[in-house]
Image 1 (cartoon, rainbow, N blue to C red):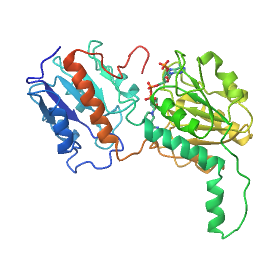
Image 2 (image 1 turned 90 degrees about the horizontal axis):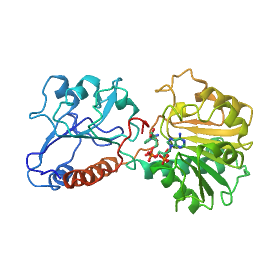
Image 3 (image 1 turned 180 degrees about the horizontal axis):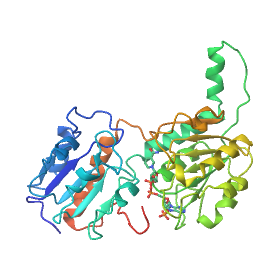
Length: 344
Ligand SMILES: NC(=O)c1ccc[n+]([C@@H]2O[C@H](COP(=O)([O-])OP(=O)(O)OC[C@H]3O[C@@H](n4cnc5c(N)ncnc54)[C@H](OP(=O)(O)O)[C@@H]3O)[C@@H](O)[C@H]2O)c1
């Protein structure tokens, strides 16, 4: 149990896709700041930004707790690049809450001693992602692209669509995003089968299986949703052999990380009709280069890794952070604790 008196909480880096950042690189609203301060008396809150850290304005005293969005080794908008992030990681630090669900880019910096817990933002984006997956499912099954094309050409042409009721969806990764996806899919009458490392029954899925059953599940699935983290174990998990095992004409939706799939094998599978199409939000190389064949492939829909887009991201992050801050002060287990050995 830790006392809140003089606990120094530092917030830095605008969360990816946050819709209303301030021009100075800060993002917390007065309501957000009040919610953080209300967790315990005497909490000291410093809200800084990339530009100030890069100019050497390091908060003092050193932070006890960080709420941070970092872009790791890259440079991306108002997120903290490696050096600015490193300037906040001092011996006094006791916990880091990331604003992203995937934290591979933070772990690979190798800055964090094992003794400092890192929690990810799992769940913060999950409802919006579940909605985007269902948008992709409906876009495909109700042939919305062709409908728009026909309207542009003023063509009164009936299309043969499919019904979702009774279809099967394989959800690779039965965590926050997988669960929110499955809940929505089941409301449409879709049978949902989750795949996770540690399978156990879940109210959100009709069945949950381990990775060893993946090919069997793919063989009977009309929709394949990739919603697991990128780890050494999941890299290339949807590869040539798995795509060969899929039900012919299945539709692939990847809202996780490009490298969980073999992207060349996905392209070949679409061209061969093994997959009827794919909705891809995440890629091995981002931004996806203009010359990449995915852009022009009929049947493939490309979105710029923003399927989580929501006006509620900031509120969701602050709700998770304040709950975790309360747990931290009470000595209770933190939500979304990352296991660096597992990679998520
Ligand atoms: N497109 C976007 O905008 C966007 C936004 C947010 C997140 N993401 C991506 O989505 C990923 C998932 O997010 P989340 O919040 O749902 O994560 P999560 O709650 O940690 O869930 C991850 C799920 O993946 C499963 N998993 C991990 N390794 C596996 C393996 N080798 N085989 C089968 N299943 C495995 C886990 O199994 P256990 O439950 O058994 O551990 C868990 O069910 C993130 O890591 C991130 O890369 C994308």
